[in-house]
Length: 191
Image 1 (cartoon, rainbow, N blue to C red):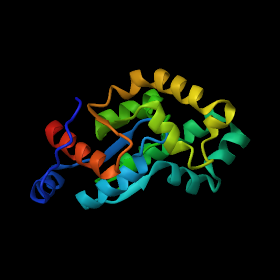
Image 2 (cartoon, helix red, strand yellow):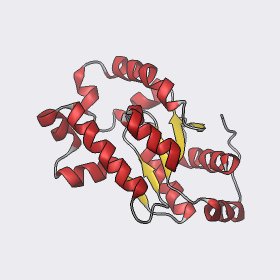
Image 3 (cartoon, rainbow, N blue to C red):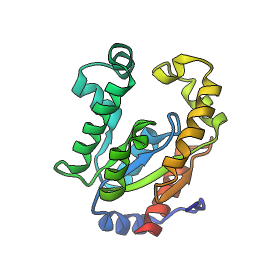
Protein backbone atom coordinates (compact mmCIF):
# COMPACT_ATOMS: atom_id res chain seq x y z
CA UNK A 1 0.00 0.00 0.00
CA UNK A 2 1.64 3.28 -1.13
CA UNK A 3 0.55 6.31 0.86
CA UNK A 4 -0.04 10.00 0.27
CA UNK A 5 1.75 12.74 2.16
CA UNK A 6 -1.11 14.40 4.05
CA UNK A 7 -0.74 14.21 7.81
CA UNK A 8 -3.00 13.25 10.68
CA UNK A 9 -4.12 15.80 13.23
CA UNK A 10 -2.77 15.58 16.78
CA UNK A 11 -6.15 14.20 17.91
CA UNK A 12 -6.04 11.53 15.21
CA UNK A 13 -2.48 10.62 16.24
CA UNK A 14 -3.58 10.26 19.89
CA UNK A 15 -6.50 8.03 18.83
CA UNK A 16 -4.16 5.97 16.66
CA UNK A 17 -1.65 5.55 19.50
CA UNK A 18 -4.44 4.19 21.71
CA UNK A 19 -5.30 1.55 19.06
CA UNK A 20 -1.75 0.21 18.68
CA UNK A 21 -1.36 -2.94 20.78
CA UNK A 22 1.98 -4.30 19.52
CA UNK A 23 5.38 -3.06 18.38
CA UNK A 24 5.77 -1.02 15.23
CA UNK A 25 8.80 -2.39 13.37
CA UNK A 26 10.52 -0.38 10.66
CA UNK A 27 12.27 -2.41 7.95
CA UNK A 28 14.16 -1.39 4.83
CA UNK A 29 17.58 -0.69 3.38
CA UNK A 30 20.45 0.86 5.30
CA UNK A 31 20.26 4.63 5.08
CA UNK A 32 16.51 4.78 4.47
CA UNK A 33 15.98 6.56 7.80
CA UNK A 34 14.59 3.84 10.06
CA UNK A 35 16.28 5.21 13.19
CA UNK A 36 15.52 8.88 12.51
CA UNK A 37 11.93 8.21 11.49
CA UNK A 38 11.55 5.72 14.35
CA UNK A 39 12.58 8.24 17.01
CA UNK A 40 10.12 10.84 15.72
CA UNK A 41 7.35 8.26 15.33
CA UNK A 42 7.88 6.91 18.85
CA UNK A 43 7.72 10.41 20.27
CA UNK A 44 4.42 11.16 18.53
CA UNK A 45 2.92 7.83 19.62
CA UNK A 46 4.23 8.18 23.22
CA UNK A 47 6.12 4.90 22.93
CA UNK A 48 9.72 4.00 23.66
CA UNK A 49 12.09 3.79 20.69
CA UNK A 50 14.58 0.96 20.31
CA UNK A 51 17.28 0.67 17.67
CA UNK A 52 17.97 -3.06 17.17
CA UNK A 53 21.54 -2.35 16.01
CA UNK A 54 22.28 -0.46 19.24
CA UNK A 55 20.80 -3.34 21.25
CA UNK A 56 23.01 -5.81 19.38
CA UNK A 57 26.12 -3.72 20.05
CA UNK A 58 25.19 -3.48 23.72
CA UNK A 59 24.60 -7.24 24.02
CA UNK A 60 27.86 -8.09 22.21
CA UNK A 61 29.90 -5.30 23.80
CA UNK A 62 31.24 -4.65 20.28
CA UNK A 63 30.35 -2.41 17.35
CA UNK A 64 28.60 -3.95 14.38
CA UNK A 65 31.67 -3.46 12.15
CA UNK A 66 33.75 -5.29 14.80
CA UNK A 67 31.24 -8.16 14.94
CA UNK A 68 31.31 -8.48 11.14
CA UNK A 69 35.11 -8.34 11.08
CA UNK A 70 35.74 -10.85 13.89
CA UNK A 71 32.85 -13.30 13.43
CA UNK A 72 31.26 -12.68 10.02
CA UNK A 73 27.80 -11.85 8.78
CA UNK A 74 26.15 -15.20 9.67
CA UNK A 75 27.13 -14.80 13.33
CA UNK A 76 25.84 -11.22 13.32
CA UNK A 77 22.50 -12.25 11.74
CA UNK A 78 22.00 -14.97 14.36
CA UNK A 79 22.48 -12.46 17.19
CA UNK A 80 20.29 -9.94 15.39
CA UNK A 81 17.47 -12.50 15.15
CA UNK A 82 17.62 -13.22 18.89
CA UNK A 83 17.71 -9.53 19.84
CA UNK A 84 14.72 -8.66 17.64
CA UNK A 85 12.75 -11.61 19.05
CA UNK A 86 13.48 -10.34 22.57
CA UNK A 87 12.41 -6.81 21.63
CA UNK A 88 9.14 -8.02 20.11
CA UNK A 89 8.23 -10.59 22.76
CA UNK A 90 9.72 -8.92 25.84
CA UNK A 91 8.00 -6.86 28.51
CA UNK A 92 6.55 -3.55 27.41
CA UNK A 93 6.32 -4.50 23.77
CA UNK A 94 4.36 -1.42 22.74
CA UNK A 95 7.35 0.32 21.18
CA UNK A 96 8.85 1.43 17.89
CA UNK A 97 11.75 -0.73 16.71
CA UNK A 98 14.20 0.18 13.95
CA UNK A 99 15.82 -2.93 12.48
CA UNK A 100 19.04 -3.30 10.54
CA UNK A 101 18.78 -3.41 6.77
CA UNK A 102 19.22 -7.18 6.53
CA UNK A 103 17.06 -8.22 9.49
CA UNK A 104 13.82 -8.71 7.54
CA UNK A 105 15.59 -10.99 5.06
CA UNK A 106 15.91 -13.73 7.70
CA UNK A 107 12.83 -15.97 7.37
CA UNK A 108 12.41 -16.49 11.14
CA UNK A 109 12.79 -12.80 11.94
CA UNK A 110 10.43 -11.80 9.12
CA UNK A 111 7.78 -14.31 10.24
CA UNK A 112 8.00 -13.07 13.83
CA UNK A 113 7.68 -9.42 12.77
CA UNK A 114 4.76 -10.13 10.42
CA UNK A 115 2.93 -12.18 13.04
CA UNK A 116 3.48 -10.10 16.18
CA UNK A 117 4.18 -6.55 15.06
CA UNK A 118 3.11 -3.84 12.65
CA UNK A 119 5.70 -4.04 9.86
CA UNK A 120 6.42 -0.85 7.93
CA UNK A 121 8.73 -0.93 4.90
CA UNK A 122 10.55 2.35 4.47
CA UNK A 123 11.67 2.45 0.85
CA UNK A 124 13.95 4.86 -0.97
CA UNK A 125 15.74 5.20 -4.28
CA UNK A 126 19.44 4.33 -4.48
CA UNK A 127 20.51 7.99 -4.92
CA UNK A 128 18.90 8.99 -1.62
CA UNK A 129 20.39 5.96 0.11
CA UNK A 130 23.87 6.81 -1.24
CA UNK A 131 23.57 10.37 0.02
CA UNK A 132 22.53 9.22 3.48
CA UNK A 133 25.00 6.35 3.97
CA UNK A 134 27.85 8.49 2.71
CA UNK A 135 27.65 10.57 5.90
CA UNK A 136 29.02 7.74 8.08
CA UNK A 137 31.61 4.98 7.77
CA UNK A 138 29.81 2.36 9.88
CA UNK A 139 28.32 0.13 7.18
CA UNK A 140 30.32 -3.14 6.95
CA UNK A 141 28.59 -4.30 3.78
CA UNK A 142 29.59 -1.10 1.96
CA UNK A 143 33.28 -1.66 2.69
CA UNK A 144 33.34 -4.52 0.18
CA UNK A 145 33.36 -2.46 -3.03
CA UNK A 146 31.54 0.34 -4.82
CA UNK A 147 28.70 1.59 -2.55
CA UNK A 148 26.38 2.40 -5.49
CA UNK A 149 26.76 -1.09 -6.94
CA UNK A 150 26.35 -2.73 -3.53
CA UNK A 151 23.24 -0.72 -2.62
CA UNK A 152 21.69 -1.35 -6.04
CA UNK A 153 22.37 -5.09 -5.78
CA UNK A 154 21.17 -5.36 -2.15
CA UNK A 155 18.03 -3.36 -2.89
CA UNK A 156 17.23 -5.68 -5.80
CA UNK A 157 17.88 -8.82 -3.74
CA UNK A 158 15.93 -7.65 -0.71
CA UNK A 159 12.92 -5.99 -2.30
CA UNK A 160 10.93 -9.24 -2.53
CA UNK A 161 11.28 -9.62 1.25
CA UNK A 162 10.58 -6.00 2.15
CA UNK A 163 7.43 -5.94 0.04
CA UNK A 164 5.91 -8.54 2.36
CA UNK A 165 5.48 -5.79 4.96
CA UNK A 166 1.84 -4.68 4.83
CA UNK A 167 2.68 -0.97 4.97
CA UNK A 168 4.96 0.55 2.31
CA UNK A 169 6.16 4.13 2.70
CA UNK A 170 8.45 5.99 0.32
CA UNK A 171 11.17 7.92 2.19
CA UNK A 172 12.36 10.77 0.00
CA UNK A 173 15.31 13.14 0.25
CA UNK A 174 13.23 15.71 2.15
CA UNK A 175 12.73 16.03 5.91
CA UNK A 176 11.97 12.85 7.86
CA UNK A 177 8.84 14.52 9.28
CA UNK A 178 7.16 13.96 5.90
CA UNK A 179 7.98 10.25 6.07
CA UNK A 180 6.71 10.05 9.66
CA UNK A 181 3.38 11.50 8.49
CA UNK A 182 3.15 8.84 5.79
CA UNK A 183 3.92 6.10 8.32
CA UNK A 184 1.19 7.35 10.67
CA UNK A 185 -1.34 7.34 7.83
CA UNK A 186 -0.23 3.85 6.78
CA UNK A 187 -0.63 2.42 10.27
CA UNK A 188 -4.00 4.13 10.65
CA UNK A 189 -5.25 2.64 7.35
CA UNK A 190 -3.86 -0.82 8.20
CA UNK A 191 -5.43 -1.00 11.67
